[in-house]
Image (cartoon, rainbow over all chains, first blue to last red; front, side, top):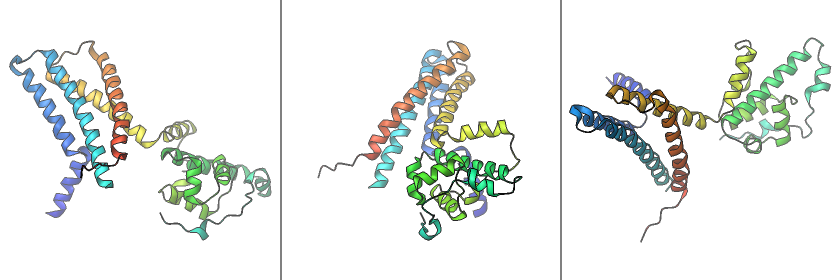
Length: 74
Length: 185
């Protein structure tokens, strides 16, 4: 069982390095898909949510890593 | 890092292998030896560049002189096994990693790989990350049914945007990571 868990963890680790980042990107994609479904908003707005959301997640992830580095030094 | 000062003790005056030392070898071996040392030098230079180390930093870390290291990198030096080991340790590599791989690459491929290897590892990761993000956003949008303005060319705009945001974020992150936390108390 332990071997299986390790195996799964290693395989997941190949694709997901930062779980929070991966989750945040999935939320952004989900939000865009939800916005586009049934034409809740226009295509342009959904595209903006996707691109803007990814940019926001990128910056947030970098800053989070920076604060984590600072915290680990202290 | 483990330092073995005795192991890296080298004579102060390092004689370049060529032409004197190579001339002492049998005539049919001198060119191969010179080529081998040049390849070792390339491996050292390539791995140093890959880690973003200056020659001085590597010389200090491996306890060799900067001048001798320059000789090794140019293929003019004939480092002892202990010096090669010290350099490899300073680069966090096994000593064997600094020995050229014989007969596994063509000259052209080797030149391209050597060129690529001189790009610092983090720069390569950054570039790959930008490409993955840009293409990922584009194809996710396509999958959701978004009709991107400009068609495929919008990928270039994504690359430029993510590159700009990434380049601006990195210095900010460095400042945050390096600054001290100020507690109000």
